[in-house]
Image (cartoon, rainbow, N blue to C red; front, side, top):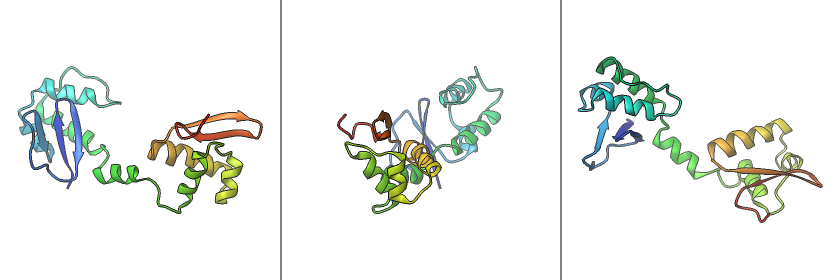
Length: 160
């Protein structure tokens, strides 16, 4: 079961409860524990406001609604297993690994070259660039218009 550690305004999902917590950390496993915590309504609002995408509020109406809304927001945090899987990278020998290898080359790769290497259609290649490489693996892609067409590279990997 996923637990959440609150330190100041930062909330982190953990797979298992840590053995020790510092004085300024609170371990949360349910909405009831948020309500029962010693956090003031202003502190709960500060945690809410620190989450990206939430509309800032000055305070919650009551502890029960604060606990319910914060617990729902905590459920949207990436699970520790999801973070580890994304950080691990693609399986060796997979098409994603092959594409990353092409993009790491100093000369980079065009969409046509990736299509030839994988057998994919152009929209699949571009979707993989945006979805798997940029969002999931957090790689920074750069592109440049060259003589052979638009060439894509993984930033920091290729000699310009």
